[in-house]
Image 1 (cartoon, rainbow, N blue to C red):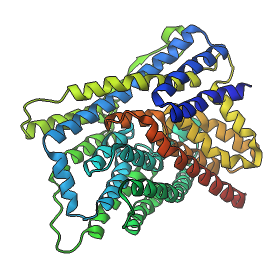
Image 2 (cartoon, rainbow, N blue to C red):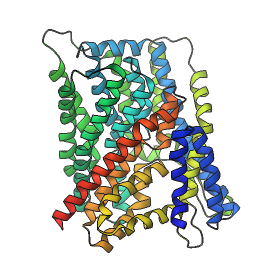
Image 3 (cartoon, one colour):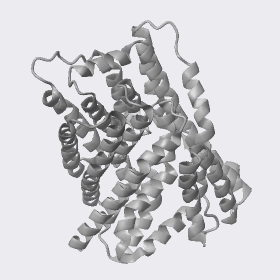
Image 4 (cartoon, rainbow, N blue to C red):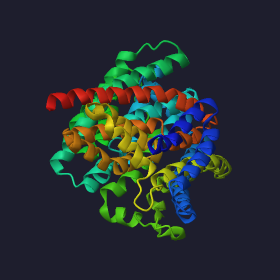
Length: 486
């Protein structure tokens, strides 16, 4: 009974989101999870502590939304967005090729540089500037982000999510990274096929699929190679190599030289996002946190690190654009308006996640622990279920890293009990956790809000089937590999 009840919030979120919309789903889910939280034996202080953690997490996401909308609005008013789209016309005349170049290359790049939902806050707006519809742009970017979030910002999901908590050896970490990257590369072909369908539905038959597949190969081959050598750099350098090689590959002889000036604000943004990862003193300074211990006497602590959010780089670049373009006024009403509208949807969805994570009290397993235990009973078929545990973790927590932290130990225990290679099972966990970013409600709400979408359900409906089928494919490939390895 407890296992079914632990699954109930997730079932409600998906079912109500697809039938009544995400706004209704998160409030229904919050009410149900609240009832289950107290059924699990927790008290009022514990409940308030979990909600306080949810509020801190919500504030962090809202800062990203606010900064992204501010920068885009400044650039749009300054005419840079129009110049940016025109500059790409010199690269290739086909709009669909430019669409996939940005969707693949920039999603991977900003995920590898910053994480924090940054690709969903930036790339859909650039795709919309090409003339594509907002729901399509957000759906595609989140689907591709599900491939590249495996290493997050400079390998955090692997190092902080698995290596540190589980005490893994360096050789095992590299094996896990390589296996996860290889599995996602193959699953990415299935995801790409679904994206082709989405884009074809919007604009008609695609005429340049083979060129898009070449771009995909230019990205994923170095991505996999670097995953075995330096996982923390695989996504960033894979994206840079693809974007660099795409210029001579796509550009026709005699066409005008690509005008890079409109791209300077995004180059400056990437540099500001990357510098803390490269300079330890700066990283240490930006890691200042506002911490709260034992909130409401619950034993639950929480913190927020505002300087590590992409908010500050967004604002700095936006102010720089406004200064150099001599903008008379700064756009504040639109960013603040979007932040307020997303708060009423985002907070209850984050609250559901925190209530599920903190529901265990007095030694009783939490709801998420019951879910992991339920799936671990599948015996020899467990490798097929392992990616779905990762997907579920990201769907609940909104983070590849936290999914690995929450479920990594359970996956380790299941691998030991079933006599399966630990590196293979943890690679399945990582791949599933990455795929879950495409359907995570936190990401959908944040990205859709930046893009001006009010019907979040449309994005979830586009992404749910591709994500689940990709996870199934990863599980099937993992099962085959583990059988051969065993």
